[in-house]
Image: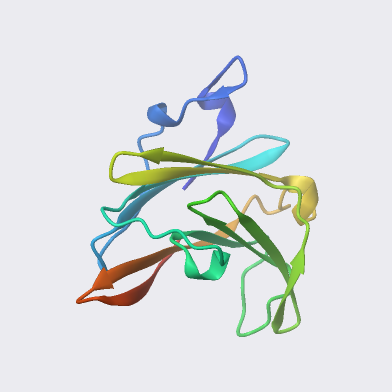
Length: 168
């Protein structure tokens, strides 16, 4: 659910608390998340609020708790990843950005801004993606998004990894 930022902006501060609409993830594990999004003429912004009693950081971004945002400026079709983008942010604030090429993901240096704020029993991720890094504002005003919550929990002394996906 994307909202124009002008509805919620004062002195260039995004007012996430004023955005009442959000997408919910939380059926697969003890962790749950709420995703909010805004946009302006420069960027699209995401806030992912994660409630997680057992935060598991790791040196390897792919083995750490975190969130992943996939998006496309065209309707995704089949296994092709052209015009699709993927951003992973872990609880340590590490960022991995990729763009699709044919059927593969290619690591790139997309100029995104990400911040992670630790909170009681969870964390919050804010992400700003410049439109210029994904080919501009979609001409159809449609942005197709999918969100994934990465959650590593210790269950009976073993690491249990849960990918929870929500399409939006």
